[in-house]
Length: 392
Length: 114
Ligand SMILES: [Zn+2]
Image (cartoon, rainbow over all chains, first blue to last red; front, side, top):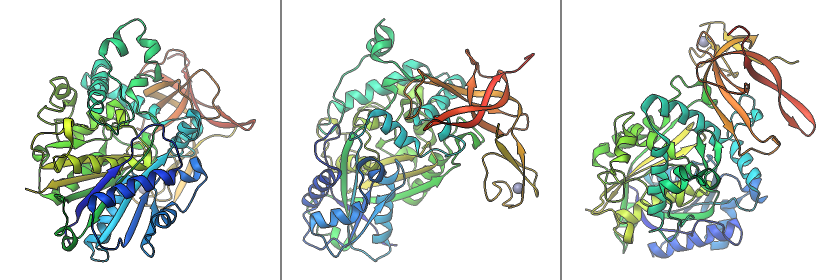
């Protein structure tokens, strides 16, 4: 297998955006190609999108993007793997380059979710769930996170305050990220303790409340991947994709043996670390899939950064803060950068690329060399993890 | 009322729900079906306020129930104050209205004498 490098990256701002899905994809793609500034033909275009068919009455998104960018006759596909579509697109482009079939590939992830109402967006994401055993009951993704949180909190002594600490930290980080959807400082008092907190922060699916959940966002993110031959000519520092891991789990959540475990996260992380030949303790910065606050805590343990049941303790001590021992979600994470589902896995890689090129401005993690991302599909039934390495 | 079916693998006797074409334990493809019923212990639950399309209640309550042999299922909770660990009776009932048509599914109600 050949080495694969990230030679360019960009993203649109996340939030409620004007224009259509293709406009967002076009903006991110153009930004990444300009950032790469490489005068060679793009041979493969991999577009991550979960719901254009449902949300935007649009199909063939990959082909449409090639046309917008006049990249013909580049090979193109649209890749759908739920909220892990972005990770999957990066992985497939990696395969293309590592195999030797392609030298230069464009990966773009995007979603336009605010074209529909909140009920429709909730229903759209819920179509991921098992059709007969979950969906018909009105089970939503927050509902699964809530049932998981109830057990996790009981078993490990995680309190509402710990969940709020994840939200507060990620909102703070997002204030340093001009691309983030949510630009709002929140306090423990305001979302939990003051009498009006129940109005500001109502229950979504008990025990989870509004500020435990990511927003519904529009946005796109893109990376340009290249073989060593091309990367050696790049003007910017290159970031190497050192490890990739992916694992699946049961479709119906109730079939998992341990309901407080995210097994696919653990297995995908281990694969990524083994491939990269590094350990969790070597990681300088991580982007985790905090669609719900409880997931950041649980994933930080399954990935091996903290002992099982101790993630909330590390959080409380500030270890996961921007200048802590193990900074998590400097971008603001899904919680505050936002979660345009098809874009997220790519946006995580974009943030890590900026971090490893030391271009992250006020949210830069000092001296970051190794980055890790976790992109969580379904309620953990398809997970992708990446280990990225900056130039020494 | 239509019952919800579970499946017993004829080779390894593992009970599964929902249906898999291949047994998750042994890979067998020969199953006998049975009606899910009897009693479960409530493993976890949530009250959902931000509802999906087609749900017009103020909230719905869902939970995962565990049968004695460890088989589990998600169902609608017909209990005012659910508590983890409580014993519940499995019945079939309407879980959703889809274009005016009732959809049947698993419901958990307070077990008599529990
Ligand atoms: Zn079997």
